Length: 170
Image 1 (cartoon, helix red, strand yellow):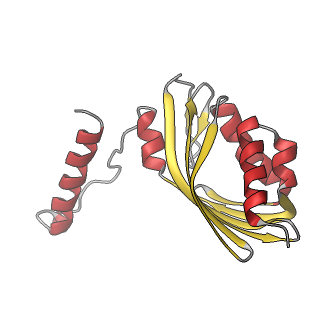
Image 2 (tube, one colour):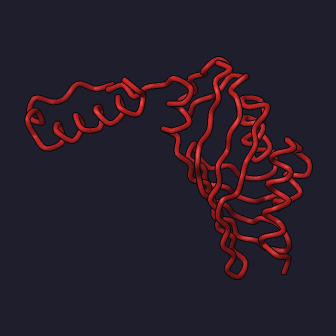
């Protein structure tokens, strides 16, 4: 069995070099990755997924802060950063034009290795941190139902709004 740490190191090197071919060499042709924006399957979708990051953040870099290996599984925590120069596609299809703003987000991944390549992966990252660094804000899209007014949920939503304002520096 190939060392999951070495495979992940090769993946990060390819990611930071924006080298799609080397990146795909780290994955089985039918690999499956579950991401915050959905599931991607196979080389074509995996290339598209990471290609979005390359075109949105052309100076994208990733730094692994923690790595644990257990058998055929590697778990990592990382920080990704760069400047948003290209269009960012949001999960609902909305596009954010390039802002030039610095963007960074933290996340973690869990990868399983089979025959020297990633067979499955799960990626988790702080979408709110990434979107807020681009100037996005949370907006309530549905009015509060009258029966919910004055409830604990309303007090929690007020706390969340105050927290978000404080994070945004307002």
